[in-house]
Length: 141
Image (cartoon, rainbow, N blue to C red; front, side):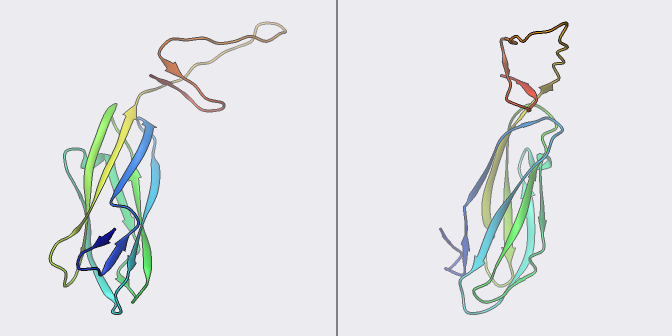
């Protein structure tokens, strides 16, 4: 995807986080590559929208060398259940409009299920409305 007068290449214009438990964090990176023959200065990275508080960003990018690249780390920390969305805006000095990246994810309540075996043998645990994986917490479906 070429962005902003062919100065930059953004690995993807969206970032989707799968279901994340409320109060848990998931992190992903966005890679930005300067495809011009001149260094470019990163002016700002902001997150806006209704659910902006569910997302965060960390960037060590300040200046992108000619044909250089860097990563912006994006975190998703839902504080309530449900679908969340926001937009990350990446602005560079000397370029008119910011580059936009759509952010989305789903927050889900987590439950703890403790099973104690009474005696020898094995068995199964069945439930309705829960999704459990091997060594992963059960989540309400």
